[in-house]
Length: 242
Ligand SMILES: C[S@@+](CC[C@H](N)C(=O)[O-])C[C@H]1O[C@@H](n2cnc3c(N)ncnc32)[C@H](O)[C@@H]1O
Image (cartoon, rainbow, N blue to C red; front, side, top):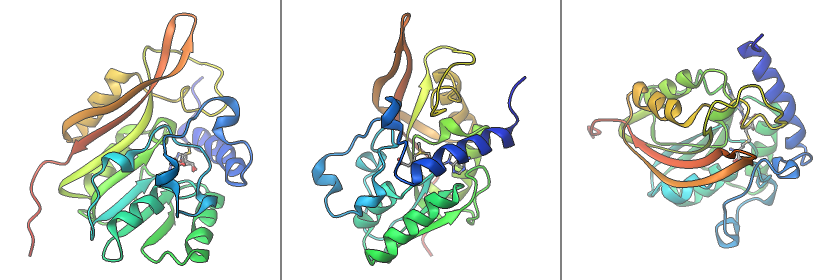
């Protein structure tokens, strides 16, 4: 029998509570890799770097000073801190995460490093506590694969983006339906098959989807079973400035 959405979330929360303590990072079991150069990481709180991502979406987001950014499943805050530096004091970056210890770790890091243009909010990414048209950019890094309701996540991302806003995400997709598999992290086991994943983004209302990075994530006897993709898509429209 399939686990219910709440069971999936409880398991994910339990898994990432351990990771928030600095133990049991995904890299320990070869599930997740980190895609940042030392230069990119210089100057951001070291406690935000847990090695839980599948790529580096900020690198492709072309963030500009003054922009508003939301990171779905922000963990200890690595991408929020990278984004906050690029959008500067006139901009803001918000991290959303459903694991209390992750939100606490990221908030403590922002306070202790005096980073004022960030905030971290405890919430599920399937129901964002943010108004319509709030963000210029929605980021996410190795998170949506864990969600039991990916359609809701993309619908919410579209809702909180301004017209013309960018979705820039790194995520894991299965290359064929792998069925129930052994996967401690959950990032492959809960992932969608590539074609269905890309279709789900399109059906949510995004356009101009393009993949900017694509690499093998898990390989089995039959070849590549899952890949890490980084993609950009846009909410149709143009922002009307008042
Ligand atoms: C693999 S970690 C990635 C963290 C961060 N993006 C990074 O790159 O370091 C997944 C994070 O997503 C959060 N998460 C997973 N499913 C979620 C959901 N449905 N709603 C909110 N947060 C979620 C977990 O609590 C965890 O912090």
